[in-house]
Length: 169
Image (cartoon, rainbow, N blue to C red; front, top):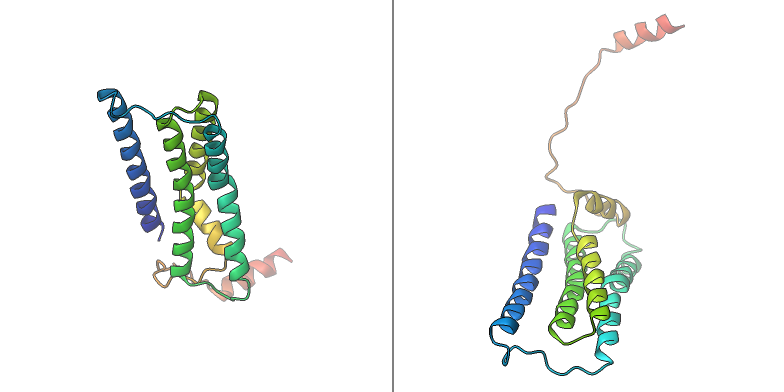
């Protein structure tokens, strides 16, 4: 499951990075064709706010809605959890796409750098690390995966335990 989510994350991150770099190359190679259009003064703050909503408020709202809808369930299926994590990744990638749009358009450098910082935060927090997935599995009561590695069972001699306990007295 972790590997599947990391593949989804890297696939979307690569797609956004390729489109972003392609747009920047187009702007430098063909200045007339790839020139940023005239942008009104209000687009910088609007893109900044939309990026903040996608990166900060979006995941919080989506987590809250998921927990609210699954509150009556004793356990959540693994497929529903993977779908939830995938959607969280896509919400973070929307923030990266908005930062890309702010960079491509002639937005003030203050708003451009702000959207970039917020998008980097979304990319960092959206990464499906093992620690975060373990915490989310426990938090949302995800059903146990049937492909657990075998556990090592150590059989102890009960007589040895009794002699140690009797020696301590």
